[in-house]
Amino acid sequence: MSGDYGRAFAALRAQAGEAWRDYTRHAFVEGLGDGSLPREAFLHYLRQDYVFLVHFSRAWALAVVKSETHAEMLAAVGTVNALVAEEMQLHVEICAQAGIPADALFATTERPENLAYTRFVLEAGYSGDLLDLLAALAPCVMGYGEIGARLQAEASSECYADWIGTYAGEDYQSSCSAVGELLDSALVRRLGPEFETSPRWERLCRTFRTATELEVQFWQMGLTP
Ligand SMILES: Cc1ncc(C[n+]2csc(CCO)c2C)c(N)n1
Image (cartoon, rainbow, N blue to C red; front, side, top):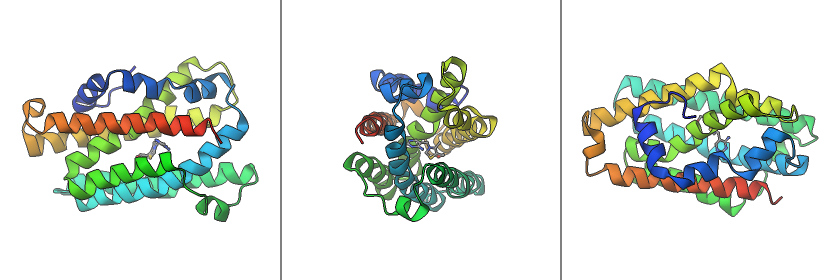
């Protein structure tokens, strides 16, 4: 169940092994699918996720800075816009319906698991190039694509159908494919067509795996409001 998110993603996902499974089949995820996730945990997750998206948008803005071609800039700036104008907006609306106003969202105290993840991603980009940054960003983007598509097919409850529908939807799935293409072309441009044989590949794999492990910690945090 890996969608068609490109060649590099398939290789990175395969080498992440157990961590990828722990992330995409976490108890929090299964609870979204069968409706057993307590509402309180979901709202706590959404509040934290709003703060996450603030920093994640900054990381994608850094991808614009680290781009070397117009095509790379276009892909990165498109993601910044989707995040700020759509995904963050969706969180504001869901939270407003649950009685959490927008200013309270922005003032949410960041949990350490949240801080660790986003600052790890930003640091990968600050001290590295676009490849280091994309290796840290990819688990988040493609993982939710994979989770959404699987839950859409398997979910046994309508409880979290909106959330599932957002990530299973055509718009989101095509943005995952676009990020997959960006990752493949950025790798070929910098490391050549046989990028898996480059001395840099192992470190990119490690960055991807660490970000995946931080996603697992983020779900775990969601279960403990
Ligand atoms: C902890 C956490 N991980 C991943 C996502 C999903 N996500 C974050 S940004 C983005 C858009 C493209 O980069 C998507 C789908 C999330 N919301 N929260």
